[in-house]
Amino acid sequence: MSNPRDYNAEHADNARQYAYGFDFDVMHPLMVRSFAPFFRPGSMLELGSFKGDFTRRLAEHFSDITCVEASDQAMQEAKQRLGDKFQGVNALFEQVQLPRRYDNIVMTHVLEHLDDPIAVLSRVNREWLVPGGRFFLACPNANAPSRQIAVKMGLIDHNAAVTPAEAEHGHRCTYALDTLERDATRAGLKVLHRSGIFFKALANFQWDRLLKTDIITPAYLEGCYQLGQQYPDLCSTVFLVCEAGQ
Image 1 (tube, rainbow, N blue to C red):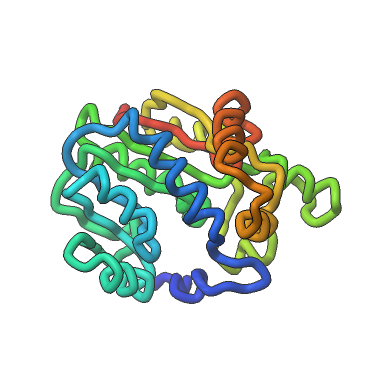
Image 2: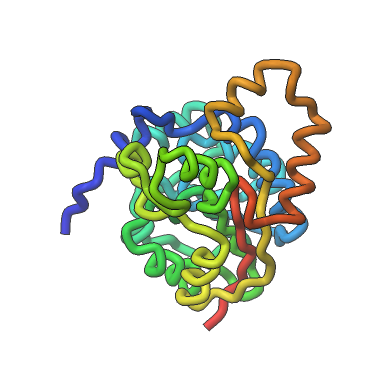
């Protein structure tokens, strides 16, 4: 059956940027920092590599990385940027056939784009993760203060709303920590750790503007990271560390 989605078009900017400097410069290093204590030696499978920005950070920890990406344009750009370090498979998660299992699997800001997230999580659990391996699952948080403020401003109807611009980018839902854990559990995964990354009261476009000034210091960013661990449900991103289960 043909898939009607155009994954190249979904990456294009519209009224909302697809990705922000805040994502690359602040969130990516903090994601790796949050995941690293749980990394296992060996191989890494990245599900959804986009243009290779996060892959580049993973390469500081792993020499054996395989990436699966639906957009052929994004994958080509990643290959150009990373060269021999990039081992990519241009395929859909629902259809790809991988030759082995992996010690680590990471999926960051991808699950909310999937038409059938539980089916893909089930493949992670049953087909791709080695026994005792680790799966790192991260999604934007519906309950981030920036979204709750947007509700109070009348910009969106409720915390978990999918805006028209997000829908054009391929978003199918907006997760919170409880619904993320619900879907992981339904797929048979065993949740070992749950937390959040970066307390966030401003929208990404506001952060991009502030990061160009001297208003935001490294100490302030560190404070937002530390506070996020205390209040995970008020973070920009929520994440789980899982093992294969039933």
